[in-house]
Length: 69
Image (cartoon, rainbow, N blue to C red):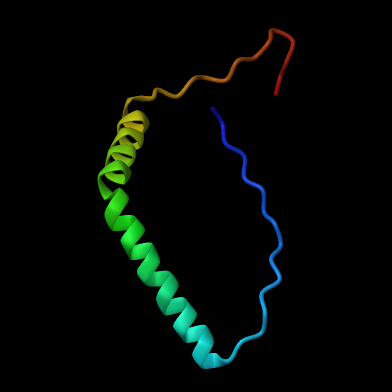
């Protein structure tokens, strides 16, 4: 299944420098927790992707008889 990504513009409120720093700190902590929780799955997925990249053989381009480029 191919995933598609859609970017949605987000209007963030203006906050103070201190509040922005605190928000970034909270988000980094949350990201660390999520990475720790899903670390085994992430490693398996990355290993499979590396294995596919090493085993995949490039296909030569298919050209029709009358096609030059």
